[in-house]
Figure 1 (cartoon, helix red, strand yellow):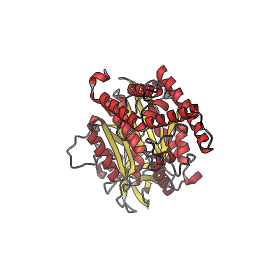
Figure 2 (cartoon, helix red, strand yellow):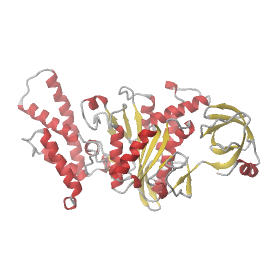
Figure 3 (cartoon, rainbow, N blue to C red):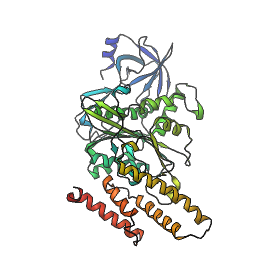
Figure 4 (cartoon, helix red, strand yellow):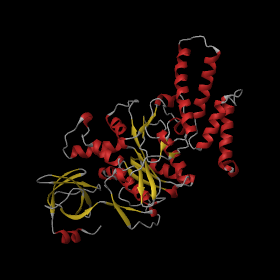
Length: 458
């Protein structure tokens, strides 16, 4: 960005700050200003045009510096652009593209892209045909995902959502795909923990972390998911498959509501402004499977939403469900029972994931879902104290073993081919006379051998 006087000489338009309402500043003047244009204050701060009224221009400021009424402001005739490039890999940046770790010498990208790009049309999109491997047994086998899918991750606080996301990122980076993790209004300590985890696993150089802290300016927090999506689009245009995680959009909605109420927008149902749907929908539409100049490439989007007391009918949650291709529901009751991950397969949905499966995996998927339904019905016999015959006992035992089979440790990633082999061994009762703990130990030995021995993989 150039300084105030340079832009003033270029545009020959000047405005004055009339009112200040925290992150929203009202400016008079600037007759030719355009929506989403960048403006510069004489203090050196800059902001973006949020809306235009007949008499005042509403500016969204990106810093927490106090700007006083009477301060001069000029337009730049530019829109907000984010620096993008391979130089960002392995770094933690803020929503404006600046490195968070200023102590490290960094080469910043010279290329930039508009933050609010229009989603590509149907002509440039392709059907989703490639399976997205998460390494999580219950997802890959019962609720499969595809490259280019938008899958909502929803559940209460502290039910294992972030553990699932970090495991999925870990698996995708090891497969050579690019991952973008967007931390929206998080504590700096939490962002640091995530950075240290990926650095320890040796995959940080294949991903970008876009982070805004809870103490940052509201305007910066609002920009965070859009910056992550813009960087994803750059790597997509390079022919790469990209996984972008938006953690979380419930927080993003709260800060957007704050901006809208400061901007005197009339609150809608549950006090949210009615345009929150548009705000998130234009973000979700930028993901998908695309035709690019360098071949087929996808942006898989995993937005996160937080429920209260397991209520899936909340305003933001239902909004996001209607604009995504399914959701994974993390059930707090299953979490308290000790299931890891605590995904409820009956309340979770995948709309396009099954079309990416082979015939064998599709048949296994049907068997698992139908058997788990039967297992849940059989559980009612125990509650009523009914006498159990041998068939019911066998069904309950197999069901317990399958539930145990789906339980995984936090950093445990299982390839899809190995998942099929292990499940078939369990389904064929090859571990019939073994205790569950012994079966679990056998599975871990097979997974470890698979990951370390190249001959087994081949």
